[in-house]
Image (cartoon, rainbow, N blue to C red):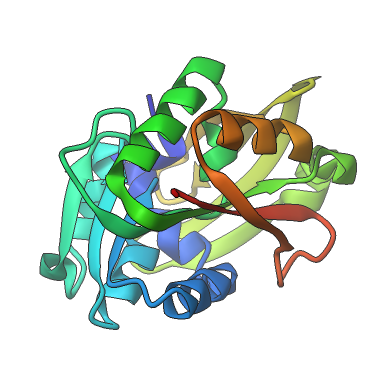
Length: 241
């Protein structure tokens, strides 16, 4: 099941305007170009920002996400007809043969259940053509990113067209490594309603991820740094032989 910040229609509608700077996707666009990918599977596509960036470059894209509200937002965007949208996940995909599969942002960490993670790696491998690559990022646990997830550090007020002022903040609920649970709150001044979304992320060590990839028949080609978050994240590059 998707978290409410992606699955609730009211929250999905404001996801993009609350986070308009998606410079983190530049590195993934560059990798699509680096590998001359013509067909891409965007796992956890959300509201479709990355999928549409690729489609605008003439790349054939399949975007998959379990949150129907987010997929609905994606489908309503200009150029959405160029992407094949699937409401679901990578554990049960239709037959595909893509050059590149991606999990941008926190997608890999949001797959916190170990069995679902293994099924995701297996399903993704089946969707890749021989020689195709899987690229995804995950935070380095040593960076202890959750220590910044406090109301004091995260509180802000954003003016959104059609939604008025929206207050947002994050609060840490539990740290039980490798799992970290936090709550996002969204306060709408237009009607006084506050919506919350609880999320649990899994912080995997580099060695654990490499073992998982190898166990599913991937070749780990590289572990890179996230250009916009140097020293804080691993970017895994794996290939299907």
